[in-house]
Amino acid sequence: EVQLLESGGTLVRPGGSLRLSCAASGFTFTRSAMNWVRQAPGRGLEWLSYIADRDSGGRTYYADSVRGRFTISRDDSRNTLYLQMNSLRVEDTALYYCAKRRDYGDFLFDSWGQGTLVTVSS
Amino acid sequence: SYVLTQPPSVSVAPGKTARFTCGGNNIGSKSVHWYQQKPGQAPVVVIQYDSDRPSGIPERFSGSNSGNTATLTISRVEAGDEADYYCQVWDISRDHAVFGGGTKLTVL
Image (cartoon, rainbow over all chains, first blue to last red; front, side, top):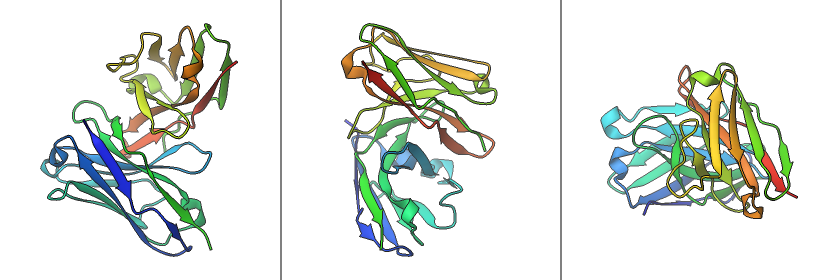
């Protein structure tokens, strides 16, 4: 069974930094592309970032709203996905989900974690 | 950037049919995936590749996609179907995943 467990969310001041983690199990992490998706309180889903598997070059993509501030990375030896968030803004307050891309075919999210809450406030 | 437009809400009585639209420029040329998100839970795929139901999803869920509109249909709606529904595509021109704004289903 695929399991994704996010951690690292907390209260942080505007302008601050935070690193989120997502521990993966139940599938071959090294062969899977991974994503971060967030959901602000009472709002919809917003895709943030994607990282390909190593065999696909590990390329990364970012939404315009976070490019230059957030960095996605992975440690395949630890089966863990990360999101380094810098220059945080009040509008970054959200529940942050780690989501696995389906390993074949079109781009869809076939497994999600339960999310970790980031609150940016002074 | 590519935009997906969904109505904010749909209301339907139990046993009736609920339809959710997802509008996008020439969306019929893309694969559309639909997610159900119940309160306090992570999203779950209910329709993939426009009209395919993943294992475990009831036959009451169906989808279509043509022209500028994709549609998710839930037949014989049940109280347990109350949730937010999101459409999603991959914008290959920008290598971005795109979600619609979501539609909240209320079962009357």
